[in-house]
Length: 336
Figure 1: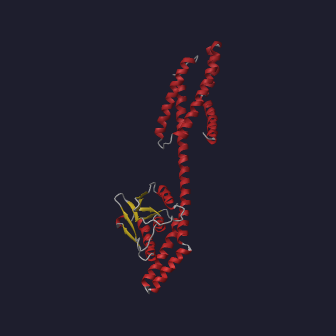
Figure 2: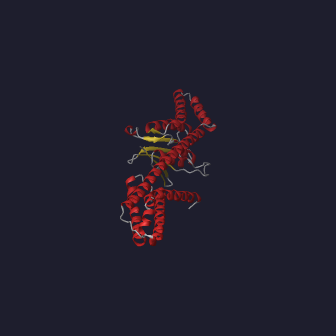
Figure 3: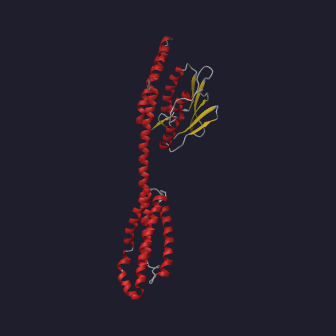
């Protein structure tokens, strides 16, 4: 147990000692009367058992609160009540045995005792449930904050990977090559696709989930530019039915996968790259490509897939799947 947990346990013990005073208040009010009724011979035993009752209730409250706060992680309040009732019954049996054996005036069958144990298990269950709800709310708020950070990081990564001198250089080269070929229609289409790519990336910070149609429209624009850049040595095949276009996916989910294809593989006349995107029977969007590893490992931080996994976990409450048999690399993205 670390120092912070020890500190919390000590504070809870102090709280339990205070709560126990209120729980045995009826016993305190009748203490003088019961002592006189028992006579002087049993006064000392009566005093010791009174102290024992107070310590017993204090420890019981402390244990139940600790159990509810640290061990019992359930949103079901009825289940929490039943478990607390079970432990309270065990404690009641132990107390009853002690009162029969040692108390000068056994009270194991008294209505006051029943009420005391009833209030203890109800109170501890309520404390545990309220704390659980508060913790869940805090966890969700932290996840939202983490998601905001990761969305900003994803946007930043997208911008830094696309809006950089090399990207502009390659884009201008593509436009220059098209102009030299005097293909005005294709040149205009290229410029329009470039505009669509920038617009989608810049607007991504305002979005969490987007439709599959929106994401694929962006991918088609980006892929068009990539195909021009690699002179058709890199091609994309997208096979998704129109009826599935309304399914949801985290924004900019496909960009890091396409980036990884270019970053980690050789793409030339001898290694033509074909990237396939389709929907499988499990309603997962599958992105696959052949593996042509570069001779030297690429200089990357390796956070692309990790960030993508985190975003799917938070936004979709689902996990992505990755398969790599050395010949083909596949990523399975769950949809909603």
